[in-house]
Amino acid sequence: MGSPVVHFEIIGADPARLRAYYGELFGWEFQVGDALSEEVSRPGEYGFVESGINGGVGGGAGYESRVLFYVGVPDVEAALREAERLGGRRLMGPVGAADFSVGHFTDPEGHLIGVAGPKEAK
Image 1 (cartoon, rainbow, N blue to C red):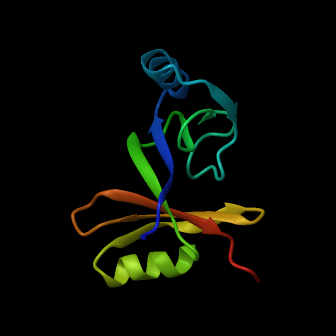
Image 2 (cartoon, helix red, strand yellow; image 1 turned 30 degrees about the vertical axis):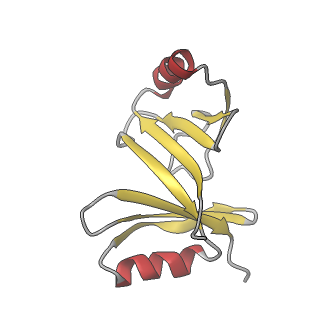
Image 3 (cartoon, rainbow, N blue to C red; image 1 turned 90 degrees about the horizontal axis):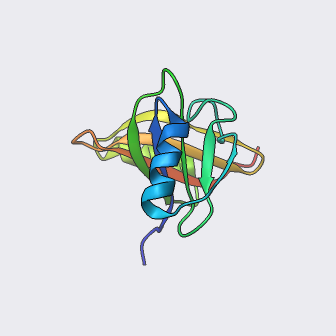
């Protein structure tokens, strides 16, 4: 079995409006706080979805609008290197806090993809 999708994000300029929209559309409830990194969302503007697959809605002024999913991997740095080797381009990472890290890359056609996994031991 391959690596599973473990998280999704919906990022935009007005995260409160996006949370209200998706909350009404899908009945999602959010726990608002901080994203893993300010590279993902303005502090205090990231709403973690409280049902189904892990997800969040965040961003703020100056954040590029996007929809993104994260694939769980055992080693974020190795996954980003492999994405580059296969013709993709690293955009972010690994970044993280505590024992968890994430990274972003684009595939050869420019689609944004995330990878997430344990933080590398030092």
